[in-house]
Length: 446
Ligand SMILES: *[C@@H]1O[C@H](CO)[C@@H](O)[C@H](O)[C@H]1NC(C)=O
Ligand SMILES: *[C@@H]1O[C@H](CO)[C@@H](O)[C@H](O)[C@H]1NC(C)=O
Image 1 (cartoon, rainbow, N blue to C red):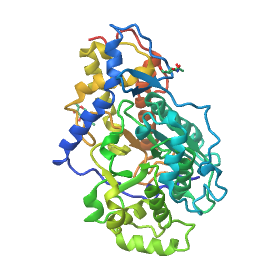
Image 2 (tube, protein in one colour):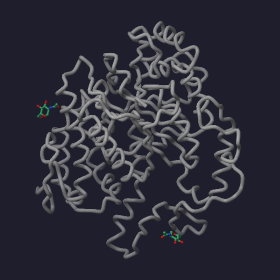
Image 3 (cartoon, rainbow, N blue to C red):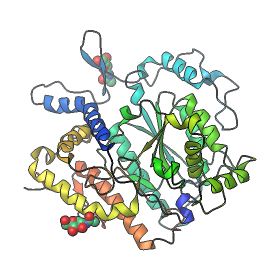
Image 4 (cartoon, helix red, strand yellow):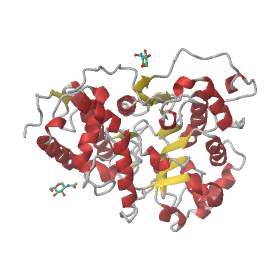
């Protein structure tokens, strides 16, 4: 799978910049509050441990409220698979894109009914999916970079209790490059009926805010979330009005139908060439003739709006996925701001177990109220995406220099790693240096 190596930006695109913040930013504030609410139970645990001596079982983290209001912990039972027939026993069922999966919502529900231990937290369960090509990278440091990008996703997933799947097999021989992810997402939905959401993250994107969590409640009425700006798609008809490198898709029949329409523009389809022409005539700034998934998605949003539009959420309020070039230069100022917060808040200088990281994210959030989100903000950007710098092939867009790409990646990877390594007692003092030093007690001193 050559997911990012022939990704959109390969074609010298100028990525869209977020539109200036408008009145809808107040919506975000209320969601930010929900985000706090979501982690509130974790905070209670932290406050609790000075007054209780009740140890929290390590692998019993899902809170479950019973009729009598006593909070207990439940954990999915990984050894229980009853003999009851489910969709897995249907010989006609196939994981490939070529065979349609029908009545998926009922099938998933049936499976969940037979596996009740997965019911707690089911609506918030996320499986992160990412991957890269089946062969070694051409860039001599490509595999090393991919490893670091993957480590970052594993770190983020571990901190927030998400499962993660890395795929490096081409599941459909004709669905190469950016088309390769759709068969993987479909197979992941079927392999993980317990997951409500599949979160595709390109191999060249990384988490640069380890605290931030997806505001899932905001998306409760939607099935697909992508970073994008409506006016660029609907009015400007720009193919960079969204970015398809990171998306959140609900594990449901709507998503399967949508992916079929979406992937139907791909190279395995007899209409591939025709779609290339249609997309290019609809989105005038698309300058390469091949049909691509990003423009395809923009087309479905703009032209088949009636059919799909109301279930697609264009997230433009925060860096659901952010353009690296506008982000990397902000890292040192942001680090300084966060250090200033730690200087005044002793709770954030405290050492703690990585498992309870979310509790400290809640404490830090108190100090980030004025930070803003997205471009121009001094909040850590959530996801930094190296569009146009291809870590594996080593090719990069002519808009950039090689140094800008590789130094930017190193900085971003170390910026993110600092948020992880701190809990292991170490820090990259200089973001350009992969080496670490040990952190003194009560760091940083006020
Ligand atoms: C998790 O909690 C339940 C209910 O309190 C308990 O019965 C079970 O033994 C716990 N599991 C583990 C692994 O601690
Ligand atoms: C970083 O902060 C300094 C001092 O406030 C400011 O002059 C500079 O423009 C900032 N750099 C960026 C990239 O925001």
